[in-house]
Image (tube, rainbow, N blue to C red; front, side, top):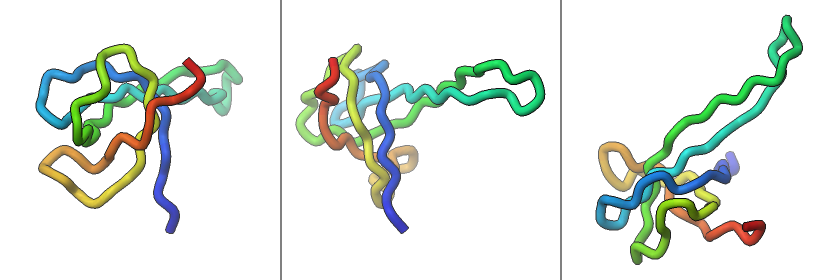
Length: 80
C-alpha cells in the first residue's frame, strides 16, 4: 500500500526533532452542498530542526518514531 503524503503548515517547532503540522482538507457536505473546512494536527519528525513556524511542508507516513510521531517531513513545499 502506498504511503500517504499530506501538505500543511508548521504550527509549532518547540520540541527537538519534531514539528506540529496542521493539515486542512475541504469537502462538500453530502446534504447541504456547502464547502466545509476541517483541519487536523500531525506530529512529524524533523531530523535537523530545519523547519520553523509558518513554513508550508509535505509530510509522509512512516513507521512509528515515538508515542505520537508516525510522520516525517518530506520537504518544504516550493509553492510558497
